[in-house]
Length: 189
Image (cartoon, rainbow, N blue to C red; front, side, top):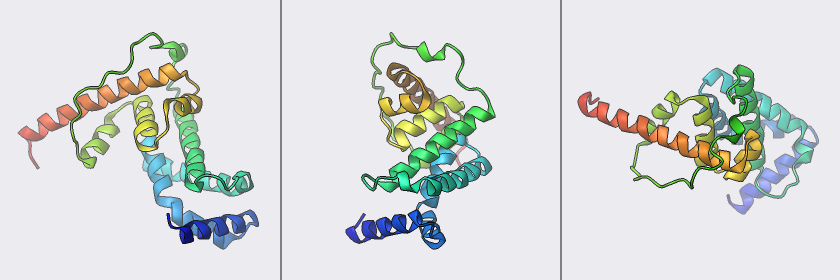
């Protein structure tokens, strides 16, 4: 981001603190698409992602005075979107089972498997087939860039459980991608 863009963003944030609706709309236009995509990757439902994104912007504008101005505003807003998306998942259905928080504590470090390059469309398609728990952890780690410490706080699980869940989710994603690749050999587009 250029210095001019950063200054413009900071000016918009200042005006948002004064409840300037035009400034809010400008910030909304700047961040709408990436925030919507963040929510969609977690929820895998366009309508629900749209609702969460709208609620997240409203919440951000109500709490914008809590943004310190240090660090990236987009990251601050993304945290709100991620938390609201996870809350929506919890409301949709209970996806963390009781006692689940201790699974995998004693498992060894994640082992690297042979990495294969996949097209974005293949990954998006495969992500849509994963269970919510896998989709969420992959989205947070790979797409949103959170580390396991941050993920453990967001999901309310231990650090080791975050690593284990990610490892399992990644393995499942690779399995789905492998099957998709094999099927595309037999049924090319």
